[in-house]
Length: 182
Image (cartoon, rainbow, N blue to C red; front, side, top):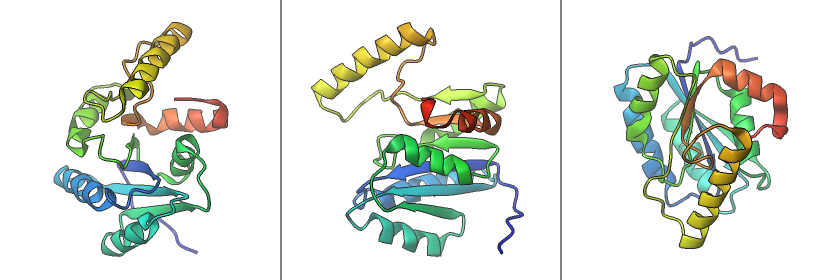
């Protein structure tokens, strides 16, 4: 039985699906930023059923850095399930979610944390320079507009996985299960 006693302030939860080309770069950039903050942290990678070498790469990263934790799905379950699995094991008081495809810049983490420290419970990023096709960007614009209308919550990019949230909100979300879309 392993008893985890270290207090963790920041948990970075990152789903991965076939990211063998990006994951080392993502890890190095993210851990560099987190280390510079001089705050306790962990990075939780969720291998969402990758068919490439993603899992082997993150296993090697974990050997180098004990702050890295891994969840492995046998098959692809999707980003929402990966986030929920990450939330289950995250120990941080602040949970940051990010995609592992390098569309989210880890150097923005301190900006997110600054907002949380100023009293915000939730900080949502937005994909300013998206690397997606025109069709995907148009679908996203329509989806964001519809979601704003339906929820009466004005976020710029509901589909952006880059966010920071206080643990207490995640605990409330976990009670909702997969029915909740944050």
